[in-house]
Length: 295
Image 1 (cartoon, rainbow, N blue to C red):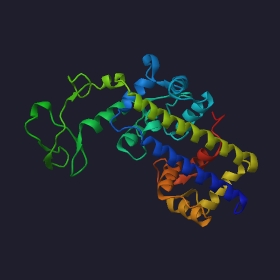
Image 2 (cartoon, rainbow, N blue to C red):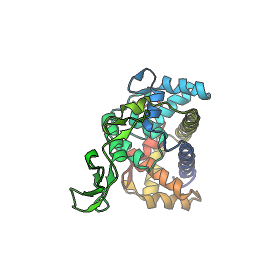
Image 3 (tube, rainbow, N blue to C red):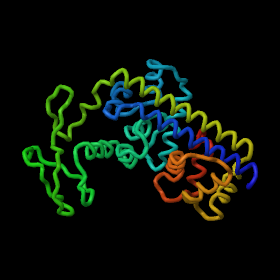
Image 4 (spheres, rainbow, N blue to C red):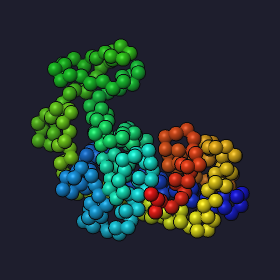
């Protein structure tokens, strides 16, 4: 597997990194002032509590043009990268999966939603990020009671460090009227500006194009070399171990003259390791075997 087989796999891995980087750069066009709940609410027609492939396709037809097959491939690719979420349903996206679609990897919001196991947990995680401040001592998230508006000094209940906290239990909605901080349901009904709709379409278009291309590359690999290719090349990258590490991946890419950028390397590691400190054969195959037709 040191010849054309390994080169073929590394070429696919390199391209995955390039496409992931392009998608992440496109996400940057979405304003940070647009709440993920507002995006979800705009896509979720009929207020079902989920976004279907039809919802995404209909949105894309209003703003631009994308074939339905590309929308389905996009959803499949998002879920392929979130195999830790056992509640995924084919052809539809939860709030946390819409987060994976539009939020840049590495941001606090993305990581909070990615680590949530339900949309209820995801909403709670968003609340914690928005309406608390981290203690500078231990990182514990802190919030002041609204009655204490005149005094910003707080003491962390965990490490007892005193600091100034400016987050209060209250937030103003679109009408300017205060909402209880735990009541963020209004965000799902906040209108999505036209500029944000066009930026959202760009993200969906980039993600769908990347999903189509990556799936095509996976199919080409399997047609050319067969299933045994993955085990052989995994052993080459890992040096015979049952796993490979970030340095292993970097070494083999550079050894075979695939000059990926540091950001592309980070995104590749996020794709293959999915938060772990090493990549197993199963995780490796998950990203290189065609996703279509899997159970």
